[in-house]
Image (cartoon, rainbow, N blue to C red):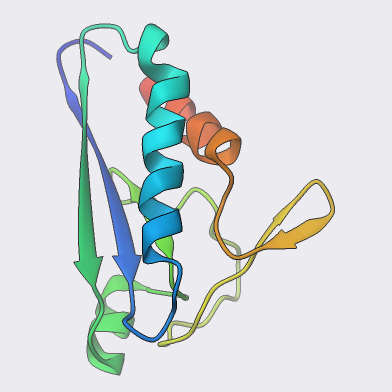
Amino acid sequence: MHNQTVVVEILLVTECPNADVARSNVDAALALLEPKIPGGTIAVHTTMVRNHEEAQERDFVGSPTFLIDGVDPFGAANQQPGLSCRIYQYEGKITAVPTPAMLADAIAARLAQ
């Protein structure tokens, strides 16, 4: 990646309480990656999903959802769009938000393309 901007978008619903943790984990992931970002920048945006129509349009499968350049790196087949909280699995455990390491790995994979 050379002088490009990677966009990390955090999709949220107001009913789920993980917005602050989602953003702080993205910030922590970026801190882990900082020495490895060659010449590009990473922009972080937060978007509220307000209704079922928006959930369908965005293929939103729960809050928080993280998109890296429009792609959900944690997506799985057969997930249904909807206004709900989302869970993630990491090292055999269930978590409400991806860890900074999970996010850093996903962002690094995009940077490597």
